[in-house]
Image 1 (cartoon, protein in one colour):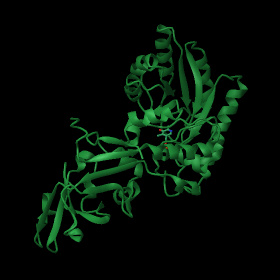
Image 2 (cartoon, rainbow, N blue to C red):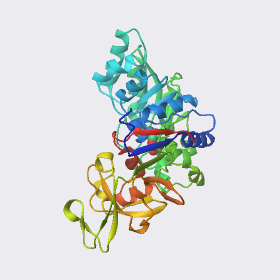
Image 3 (spheres, rainbow, N blue to C red):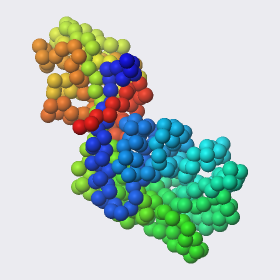
Image 4 (cartoon, rainbow, N blue to C red):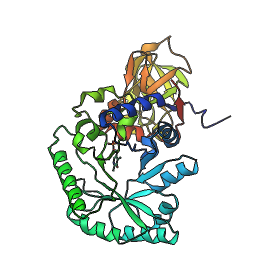
Length: 379
Ligand SMILES: *Cc1c(COP(=O)(O)O)cnc(C)c1O
């Protein structure tokens, strides 16, 4: 018996919806290649199943943050090329060259370390120069690009395959800062053209938000993350086609205990909730150890029997309580409880939980912990 799979709390991953979302994005960008971002366990969706599905759909270049994420997939037999989006350090060079990953680079130290390692193995390593057009994170400034490229070109075991940048504000209603960043990126590209550097194959900048709202940012490839999982980058996306996204993940558990309690009963740690009437309280085996933030205590609704039921008392590490008084006589041990997803006519979205926590849907799904098995659903 697969004990891990036997966990009562599971994330169900609808790969058919992943296919739908990817096709929608593909319609928007046309012929340009899509390089899906599957970092952080595919935004909590389960990196291996998502990677295999994308490769099966014909997407052979995938974006991860760290080299170890690529190694795990390659060792598992996933045949893809991996772009590393986070800054790397010289101690990563060996793994990068060995596993033929393509890092984003923005330091001379890293250029040298990669070139040395590649030369040692009689190989060539491909890199993407990161340009900071406004994000203020990894990347060299536009003015530094020509010198940086010269330096890279002096290293024969190193190939500058791409120029990339990243948007800080593409998901905002005001597109002016993003349009200025696109203009800057274009100017950088022009300076490299002036230097007769035709071998730079791909220029890429667009995340999910830009795919919907900034067609000028498409360039030669796009890097969608959140949208492939069917979640909107923000509520400020203008393109109505964002409505066509279908959430890939559902998070479900079940009732493990039920009990009637009198009015005035304090529930869970700290008695942060007291019943105001005789109540039927269900225990469910999901808590902050599963990635359900303790800050949602007394502040979210789960679906039971197609009805929204309030969560009551503090969320503990492994369990929490749902007030199912409204379902008296209709709820039994083992009944399904939905944390994120649909049940009957009701739906709880990652956006709804994000709003309650003052965060974004990205964090809600990414926070679902390793303890929760990801179960692939073939709809
Ligand atoms: C995560 C990431 C993306 C994808 O962003 P989404 O908003 O999820 O589409 C693209 N590019 C870089 C550099 C990233 O770090």
